[in-house]
Image 1 (tube, each protein chain N blue to C red):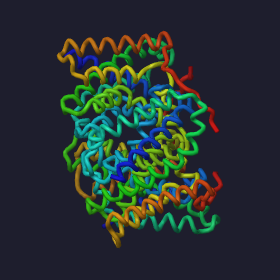
Image 2: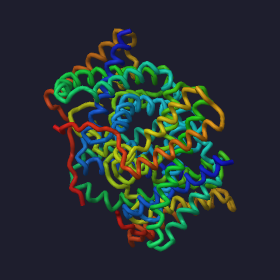
Image 3: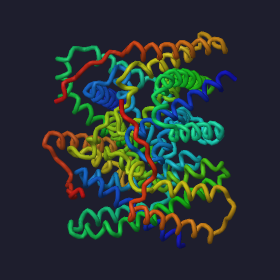
Image 4: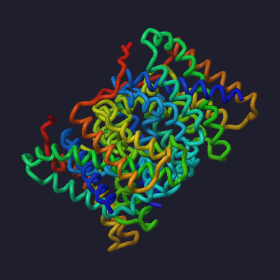
Length: 201
Length: 201
Length: 201
């Protein structure tokens, strides 16, 4: 039940992040819907492909689709001055989505008894794959690969869940809260992963 | 029979649009073939993935492949001054391809008894998915997301076919003609979808 | 046995080429791992998708994953002045990877008794698909489509293997050596495929 609420919040946050990027790039209404839908559902679709779940499970999420489309439509219609307020909430909701999808993605791979590398990849793709496709379609460098720590927290969730030292709902809720908190802290404090600059020839 | 002719026209138009983009980007002969083939067959491949048809049906289209490769080769060899004439015909042929592939893509999803959201996505991907991948490989913003109305007509075809109020060949031909006509009008009159500019922070 | 050694060399070369591109783009540590892994394993994954092998065979390559991750980690840690020496070896190792993966990819398609177009596509994707995805994620024009001849040698291997005039290990080793040699010569002598510039409207 709680996971469903987190998924709805995350789906809306992801769909709106896609819609916002499309608007910033001056894409038309079709582009706004497309980037919104791809951001919300693309990560899960790629995960299903890679871990061997039928991709068609997409189409059993009719309600989630409708929620995403409604959110995008509403967002397209509201005046610009309301959008400013979204940014503040958007990052919180996005962190909820990242954490919920990472945990759920990892659990899919665990149920299929895949090795730990697959569990980590499933967590990362479900949490951040949609955002990467969104940025590609907007011809941007994926923010996930360069800004404040994001997907690494999903990878961490995948690792801990994949090790299966602990299981059970309480454990998953704890991981959810950790990922969400770490992501929010990363954003607020500007935490970044190390990088190493190479001189381009 | 008629559909097969439309498919051949569409495949040639899509393959050449890929080849043209590759040449504009100064890609080499391999790039010209790759973008041509991806534009002609990429949309159908992604649709198959998402609606659960075997992707390997690609390889039963041997004749279409050969037609596409022959068209690209010919186009690469003819002198530049003939290419000018192509533009005029190219948009007509492209509209035939968009309309034929949208109708065919939607029908694939209908036969699999998928929900209406899947029928719309299948129509859009079959009609415009190849063009999106083409633009990504050329590092361009997908024209489908920003120029004159294109994929929205495919989405409309998907919606009408998916509602299944009417069926039958005559009905499908009518949709085909509508999509083609609307696309040509969009191009000639510069019809665009509404857009909403956000101030980039 | 020998093929396994070539695969390991190729996997390391591809993983490091992804890591280098990520560093050049100033991606963070996560981006370095992601581009490394995608370059090493992405081509094979897309090939599996298109020729109908289960994508999940990815997860049986646990050892290859670990080798790739270890190579990327080491590369991230060594001082910059050692990296200069890599470039010299990098192109040799990359050519070994291209040749080995092209042969292996083609053989997968042959074993599935797919038509020759599928064998060529399988060879090209296995040899150069990872590099294309790498460049997309780095928002670069794919080097494969514009620089010295690369994927065309893989296509040639696919064509010759797909014709099945000859079979057997010795034959495959000869193709391997040809592709590797031709790629190295292409790089050293700057061999390029013909291209045809179109005037952008």
